[in-house]
Image 1 (cartoon, rainbow, N blue to C red):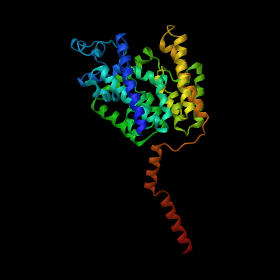
Image 2 (image 1 turned 60 degrees about the vertical axis):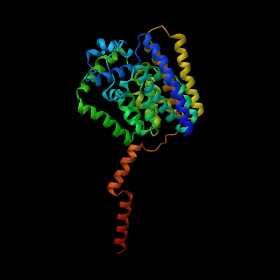
Image 3 (image 1 turned 180 degrees about the horizontal axis):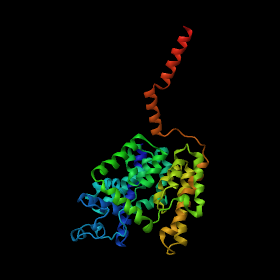
Image 4 (image 1 turned 120 degrees about the vertical axis):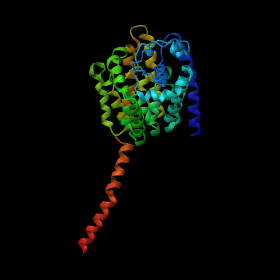
Length: 357
């Protein structure tokens, strides 16, 4: 455990430095990391303003513009994140944007590294993959959501980005994750139910136009359905993760595919998967930069270089796995309620004694 914590601390420190460098570069170019949307939304919510439809979202006031640089960057998109994501960001909204995003990324990197090294320190190399670097560059939720695949107590973050969270929950449902998600979703909704309609309007009317989020099974002229072969290994949590995630809308720009990397277990799988993602990025840099929209040109590369090898890993394994923790808990509770095996054996003994009599 001390070795894992040390490795995770090093990963977090490097990620923090990388975040500062990348965010400063993006802000200087007038681009907004994803974390800026969350920071601004949390800041507005703390001021009692609805960030899903506030005029200040795109046109901050003079006082705000004179303050943190996070207010001086123009946001072209509305807020696509749900209320739970904004609520989780509220403690960080009191900090400057760069500091807040650095803390967010460092925490995500630390927990991701601790999670992946649970089955061996060799898996720390996953922190050198392109999906991890892209997640750090833009301040994404995916490292924390991937860590929740391993740590049930972190399950509440699954509702911060539902399209990724659903796949992780189906892959490994737990009672802790269920309770955490319900609390983080229901409590803010009871207090401020108006956010649901505003959020759905933004997602339904704007998201497909500004940043297409296709489900991988619908890509490549329908050939993406090959990913459903993962159902042949449905007993395995990593197989359920791949299949459900492949059926959900996502941004095919590496970061949303980060949870898939948890399927790599052996040293060969880990190194191979990291190298494949690096080769995919080098291919894009060599042949596609400046030849169209970056998301459009990156889409097939990021999907092939993550889903492809992970599907191969899964199909090479037997269809074996224990029942998901939540189902196991429900089953045990049901047995206790009905008397279970002990009740059945007692009834059998009573019948035997009656027959003898």
